[in-house]
Length: 211
Image (tube, rainbow, N blue to C red; front, side, top):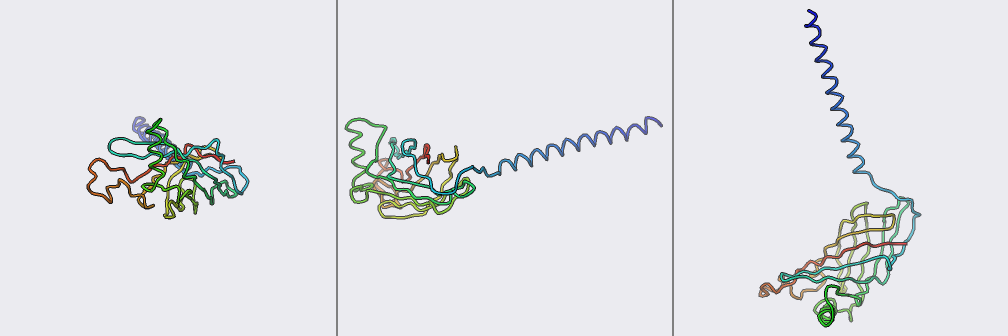
């Protein structure tokens, strides 16, 4: 009789322990998910912050089947508007297209590709010396706005990472053909074979810092 009474007690004890472990795991999962979804805020005054050009880097990458080229470009000016929670609520940027720089080549090959990128085949910087990006909306992970190159404007959305109160990184994919840059594009020329240049240009903010 004594053994018969002990069995239910043992089972009840085991069930209580298991239930406690399950609840603890569930609570931990909830806490982790809440932490994951928590929006980081920063103790910043609401207002405008200007680009710190000396500490910022804007890089570009263009690819083709036989290789790639990369470089950087300078901002003429830029600023972001931050709300009372430190979240970006707007911003405007002007790119100096005449500063297109190729960093993977030297000497005459470097001069040649920079000249080609600046002429009518690509960005035609003599006629269109500036490009523009205006931020229309953003949250803590994604930004949307309008990019204007060669007087062609298109909406663009990209993810970004905040690495400090006023420091950001991002990788932005730009379809150059939307801006009337069709040279070497197999989307428009079907007889290029492997001599085409990819439509997508990758712009990397690495990083971009404000002050």
